[in-house]
Length: 137
Image (cartoon, rainbow, N blue to C red; front, side):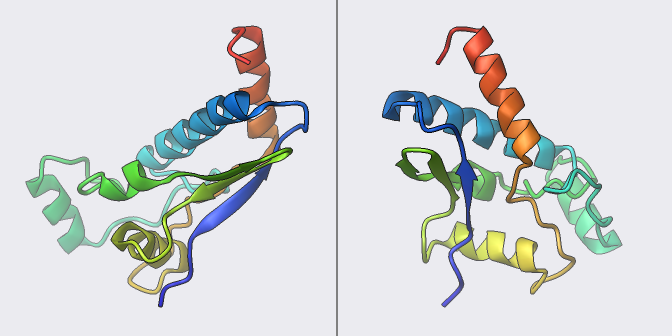
């Protein structure tokens, strides 16, 4: 069985459950957006696509960059798994097809390693600051 792909993101303890959900949604959007630009969790470009896979993606009308969105199902299925005081767990449902796809990308066990599941603390802090400035939390 494939290991569940998830991360724990530390946030300040002061946020209530509804506020944590808002923060989680913004973190998820940040990871999806960054990934769609072909950028890894370390803010570096993913390794290029093979010629064969690039042609397959372009046949679907997709960009020819490694953005992990051939169908979009994997990125859409990434979700808030658990919300606790001071900590959010983000990732994929254990045993799901999308978790297996994510595992293949993250570990590189089905091709080139393209680890997208992560976020720097500075980016979390920037997200929270913006949400506070906008009055959303």
